[in-house]
Length: 135
Ligand code: CTP
Image 1 (tube, rainbow, N blue to C red):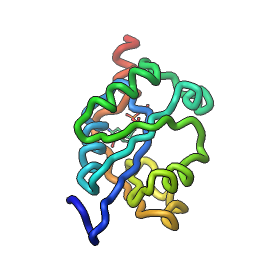
Image 2 (cartoon, protein in one colour):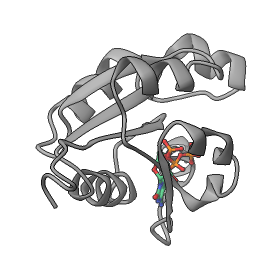
Image 3 (cartoon, rainbow, N blue to C red):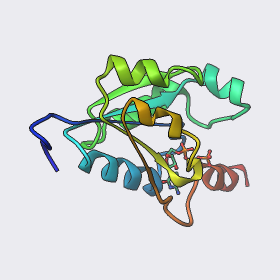
Image 4 (cartoon, protein in one colour):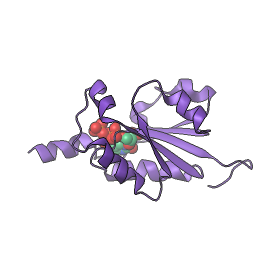
């Protein structure tokens, strides 16, 4: 979309992004189209432990995969639940994007930036891919 209202727009989204799949590509592509720059918070291994989530790929690998995408300008680590406001302020974020599995959960961020929930892509998830690898 490019520069709107004469201002350069920066978009922020978060995720674990284990076993990068087409649902991830779709949300990152759509998020990137909302602005000029897309920043992605990737959950660290320590944060996954706190969430009780086990990944196939370690943080460094998940980060490298996300960084390799043309849609993505910058990756930042997500290591706690409470960093979003600071990330928004530090990175001058205009739009916060999440999949609609999180619908309503981040509405308190609306005082800092626009908050948009995109529909999830049907039929794919990291959980599903991990279960196939476990077979
Ligand atoms: N996402 C999506 N469509 C999917 C899977 C994920 O739009 N089919 C979005 C999520 O809504 C989130 C981002 O991608 O905004 C990162 O999600 P993540 O939790 O890393 O991926 P999942 O495949 O949902 O992982 P898991 O099965 O471990 O929960």
